Image (tube, rainbow, N blue to C red; front, side):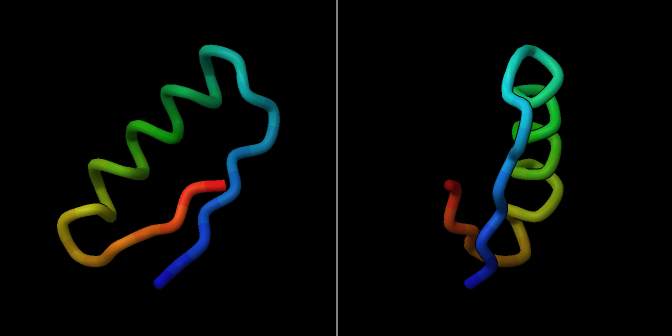
Length: 33
């Protein structure tokens, strides 16, 4: 399990989190912090 930490928040951080979740979520599980 990978741990992904999004630093900065805001609209850009949310967009990045969504992108990474969609890209990596199909291959493996992540733990969001």
